[in-house]
Length: 430
Ligand code: UGA
Image (cartoon, rainbow, N blue to C red; front, side):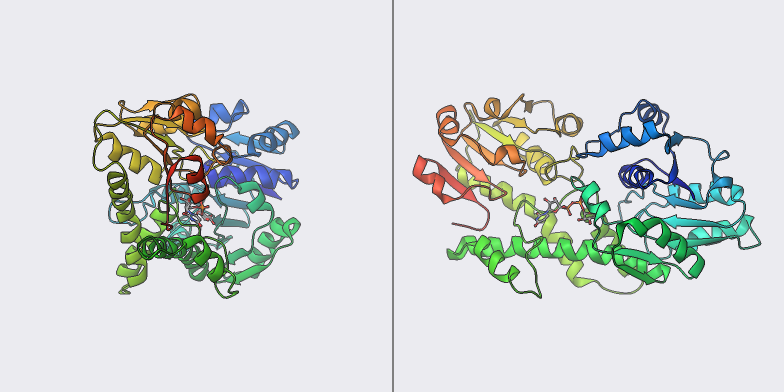
């Protein structure tokens, strides 16, 4: 079976590498010349644990190829995965220009029966839109369109690819369903087979539910701070209820990344467009946006609103650990707010500094390591739960800081550290 993947972004590249590793012949079409050149040289354009090694292994085996040429590949493909970006517009709507362009390219070139799979997160109705484009050039229906959303998390993409909780196949053709099941056979995981529209909405419902869970525990955390309760214990207790489950109940600075904020907004847009007022999701979106302001207020309270002549050290800038992605990162948003005060801001992150430099003002100092950030700080804020921040030598931290005050926005440490002389603030504990 010959597989073509269009778009070597996060979703496309992981899919391409993992399918090549299953033994399929995979060609990845990437139009960005810079990115294509890097890929051909054996370099991937982002950080994802384990991916580069697997990518190089499969590149060597010749099962994985990269090109910008549609003509040489589309006519000979059995299955084509569309993995292009669907960036958000200001009103929350997804921009489908890339999906449209790619569909036009495919429509001009398919020969024989081809399954076209939409893998990007796309609003409901996109499969039909792709079909309409294909129909214009192909009066005889020699193709099927499938919606097959992905559920990979950045930082654990390989693990998630190899052991997904479910595989969603949205289509109206048994032949296409069989092809997809052949591709995913090595995974041996449960399938949900449904129509295209249901498959499309599953992805948004999935991400928005998780965003809701996080926002819910963040609100409970705020309440806990005002009533002398401990949010971690609340999360543990409610998580033990099988109907709730323990995952995605870690309070923090709010959800970020390239998916949850965008997908929540897109779901709201799709609700409005289809005359459905999604009240819960609207509240989640608003609460998450307001979170940065409330964290900034918390910092103002800790510093007694005095920022002149103090240094604030920030540990972590990515939206989560094990990635270099800073898109919609709460850490970036907070760093931007802090950079407007008179405080001197220092940052260290193991992987995200290059991307963060493009987003943050020049006044912020990017450091080589944790100690450089900690030295002379009067407040240390932990923003991302990288493993290397979990075992800081606290006595040394105290010695290096001007004032040993820690604001732990990921609840890595506990009140125990006050015994070492720290003032300690976290999320949802007082
Ligand atoms: C998310 C979904 O988890 C994936 O299933 C999905 O495929 C992906 O979006 C996508 O649509 O492409 P990702 O954005 O990589 O994956 O990251 P998550 O691990 O879900 O974290 C998202 C945000 O929620 C992060 O800012 C994280 O810090 C925050 N979070 C997560 C919490 O604040 N608390 C939690 O308990 C869990």
